[in-house]
Image (cartoon, one colour):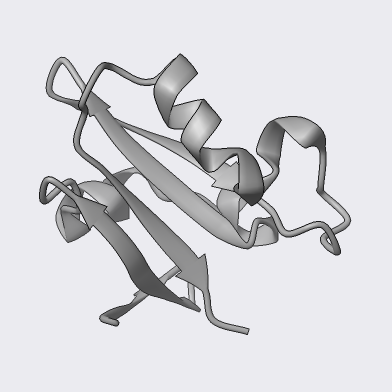
Length: 92
C-alpha cells in the first residue's frame, strides 16, 4: 500500500476505485477536521472531489453514519453511480 502524509499524519491508500485518488486534490481539500477520523473517503461527482471521514467502532467520533463498515452503503446511496473514489486509512 502506498503511504501519504496529510496534516502531519500518515495515511495508506487502501482502495483506489477507477483511479479516483489524486494526491494534489486531496492536499487542497484535506483539513484538520479529518484528523480525528480513522479513514478518509474521497469521491468524485461533476469533476469535484468530496471528502468524508469514517471511523472504527472504538473511535470516540464513531456514529452509525460514519461507520467504516457501512462504506458500501454510503457509496451506493450517497455517491454518483459508478463514481471514482478512494479510501485512505490513518496509520496508527
